[in-house]
Every structure is written in structure tokens, then in C-alpha cells.
Amino acid sequence: MGIQHSLSPLFTVIAFFLFLSSLYGQSNAARNVTVDDSDAAIEYEGIWDPEPASDPASQGGSHKVANDPSAKAMFKFNGTAVYVWFPKWSYGVSALLSLDGSDPELVNLEDDTKDPSDSAVDPSTVLRYWDGLDDGMEHTLMFEKGPGFLVLDMITSVFAEFISSSRLTPT
Ligand SMILES: *[C@@H]1O[C@H](CO)[C@@H](O)[C@H](O)[C@H]1NC(C)=O
Ligand SMILES: *[C@@H]1O[C@H](CO)[C@@H](O)[C@H](O)[C@H]1NC(C)=O
Image (tube, rainbow, N blue to C red; front, side, top):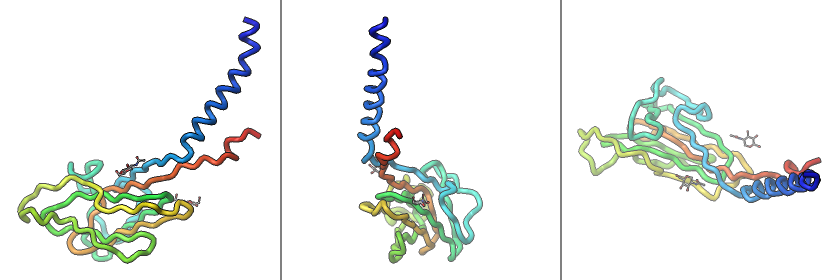
């Protein structure tokens, strides 16, 4: 008993270093942060439908929709990548996307293989992404209205987990 008792501080120290090394092991890990359409991190401008449209083909079961020419949505994030998810429709839906002030580019959300009367929606997938981003600065993803309805379904940003050694070193 006495021996075990005298060893326990050593085990505590070993456990502490194992704990530290497990944190260091994760220090370069990437973590995906999912931001669905109703997330407060997205700033909506212009006139959007007040309630998200319920839709089983959308991530999280709904998306936001706008038909106002000045409708915009802005999402700011820190990270190394961003993925933008959309379903597709048989009729005119699109989004103009830009990152950090780049020229807006059109993402066509109309499935041209479908008859316009077909009400089925293609399940949401990643239709545009940016990676290799500088995680030392804040990025801004903009959604603007293109031809047809503007939709926002879901965004995934990739956050590089960095644990600074100064925060881990006991003082
Ligand atoms: C993050 O999400 C994207 C898009 O779904 C996926 O391709 C990638 O593997 C994910 N990364 C991690 C670290 O989970
Ligand atoms: C990005 O990081 C900067 C610096 O740490 C911080 O001020 C800013 O609030 C972060 N932005 C977001 C969207 O989290």
C-alpha cells in the first residue's frame, strides 16, 4: 500500500504527459463545422422567405429561399476550406457565389435533365468548394441572386485545430 501510494504522483505525471501528447497529436487535425441555413452565423440581407422551406432533399430538412434581386447572404469564417451544399430543382434556381471579394460565379441549381413539371428535388450535395485557404485570416463567403430563385442550404467550413503550446504549458 505504502509503495503504491508513493508511486501515484509519478502515475499522475505520466497520465498528464499522455494527456498532453494526445492533445499535441490532434494539434494539426481538421474539424468540419456544419452551418445550416438557419444558423445565426449567416447574415441575410434583402427579402428572404421568413421561414426556411421544408424539404427532405435539403441538408437538415430545409433551405432558405429568396426571389428579391437584392437578396444576399454572408458567412464569415476562419479556416482552410469551405464547402457549399445545394439540392437541384427541375426549374430555375441558382446562386452567385464569391469568396473574399472574388468575381461572383454562377452555380446552376437547375437539373437540366429533368422535365420542368417534375417536382422531385435532387438531394443536396457539395456543388462548390474552396480549399487551401489561409487560416490566418477571416474569409467571407457571399451568396447573391442569379437567374431564378436564390437558395441557401448548408455550408461546411473546415477549421484547422491549433492548440498553442503556451496554453498547454503549466505555469
Ligand atoms: C469535411 O467535409 C467535406 C465535405 O463533406 C469532406 O469532403 C471532408 O472529408 C471533411 N473533412 C473532415 C476532416 O471531416
Ligand atoms: C476569426 O479570427 C479572428 C482572430 O482570432 C477573430 O477576431 C474573428 O472573430 C474570427 N472570425 C470568426 C468568424 O470566427
